[in-house]
Every structure is written in C-alpha cells, then in structure tokens.
Amino acid sequence: MIDKQVSSVAEAVAGIKDDSVILVGGFGSSGRPADLMEGLLDLGVRGLTIVANNATVGDDIVSELMSAGRIRKVVCSFPRGLKGRTIFDELYAAGKIELDLVPQGTLAERIRAGAAGIGGFYTRTAAGTRLAEGKETRVIDGQTYVLEHPIKGDVALLKGLRGDRWGNLVYHRGARINNPVMAGAARLVIAQVREIVPLGALDPEHIVTPGVFVDRLVELRNERQA
Figure 1: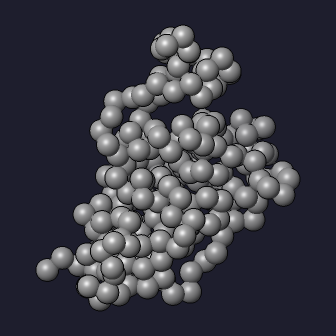
Figure 2: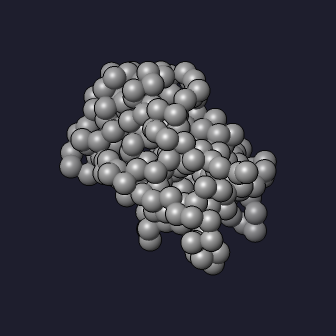
C-alpha cells in the first residue's frame, strides 16, 4: 500500500544532511513551507544552500535560519526585504553569506530545466549586464543570449493546500508559485499540507503535483505563516 504520510515535521525532515541544496517553494511567505523550514532549524543542519524566489522578507523563518548561521548561500531573485534592511543584508555585507542573484523568470526556468533533464538553455535575460559576466553567450538571430544551467536540489520543501496519502497535491491559488516545478527537481521531495483527504477526494483535474513526485507528506492544520 502506498502511503507517504508521516506523523510530524521532525519525521518529515529526518535525514537531511549538512551542506544540502534545499529548494523552497512559494513567493515571499505565500506558499512557503515555513513549518518544514522550522524543522530544518530544529534538526540543526548547517551549510545549507537555499534556492527560493525570495531570501528573507524580514521577520520570518528564513531570517531565523540565517541568524543561527545555518545558511551558507542563497540563490534567489529578491534578496532584499520589503520593509528595509534584514539579517541577510548584514550577513552579506560582512561576507558571511553568499548570493547567486538570478532573474525571476530565469530562476523558474533553471529549476524547470533541472526537473526536465535539460542540460541548459539560452535566454536574452541578463545579456549585457553584470549577471552575465563569466557566462557563455551566443548570438541568435542577431540577439545576444546567455547560457544558463539547470538547478537541481538535494531536497525540495513544498507547501500545498490538500493532499492524499499517495502524495497528490493541490494548491491555493498563487501560493503554488515554484512549488510544482521544484517537485521534479530534487532527489527528496517533502510536502506540508493543511489537510490530508481520502483517496478519490481530490478531483484529478485539480491535482497540480502528482504523487509520483512526492516522497513524504505531513498534515499541519495550524501551520506557521512566515
């Protein structure tokens, strides 16, 4: 019998190791698996590379991980907080954290390439800017394109709205951003959902992430919001 449910966050994140590359779904705090990330904090792993749309928005679980010295590098589109300076700014200025700044569409496509087994792709985004320095370029139809490589993770942390014991997931509107594509780009995929429902309760037309991509699933009815 296929049953991917686990009983706790601690069980969900068990076995994640130091120096892992962690793909984190969501946009800002919307759709972010904050409880699973708190589980990383409790687990005590260090040297993490976090791949996410945002670094920290300020007072959130990412800032807690940074303050605890757990994150070595951030790969993201928006490193700055929306409300001014954050712990990231302080750590980056002090040379205590690395940043790989990636345009938002390029970040999503690099993750998709990792999920699809694509070895790389050319994009006009960032051509002629500092973000293209040191990267291979090619002129196609008179335009300069930059070669970008796929992103793959050791672990993907996802947040869905509902799931079933097979790991099928549905999301809440825009909170699905980056979650589905990250499900295919990591060796271990862990999802938190607000509710686990019986098999057959999810309309197949509404399932966004098929259970074949999910390894562990935990129900959290009182989820952390940031």
